[in-house]
Length: 250
Image 1 (tube, rainbow, N blue to C red):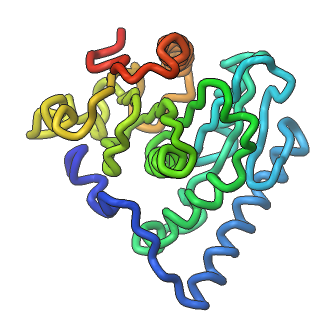
Image 2 (image 1 turned 180 degrees about the horizontal axis):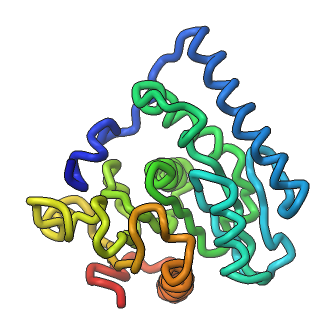
């Protein structure tokens, strides 16, 4: 399966499936499962706020919202980014349900839930959403909701994900250099020409890690530099209608 076919289970447009009574019950059990895992980590570090786990809450920079596949990933990234960078962590459907049909049907409901819990006062600074692998489509959906409902185009940073939703704002796409999820490494299609047809403002980069290893050394140091550089570029161009990317980001 190449990097494009990997994400075929995700509809290309936002689609809110009408859930049955039993499905709603299952959805809320999933939310409870995520919350139980969050509370275990909260005892050690971080502060819960609704569905979010907040790290470095006293930092002075604008918060970064990131959707993870495991709360431990959030802890690793928060430590690497440093005490001055607040990180608002969300959890994907990874490991809380293994059924791909269920993940597809629940996806937009979870994205909307996270969007509605974002503090409006945090939307005044440069707004950044990130996500890795199965969590990346959630970040993309939340960004689209933000663009449509708040008329704000955030920066979206994804890892190991080929965008499906065609978000029109600025995006940075990161891939493991020799990962099967890297379309430059494992695909019969040339990704840049495909992205050019649907995105106006994007960049890409590579991490020296296999799939799933991007929160370990040396990839997490590279990830930190990518985040800091991209956010700095985005902040300088905030409010401008011109593109800030369309090139590989060194």
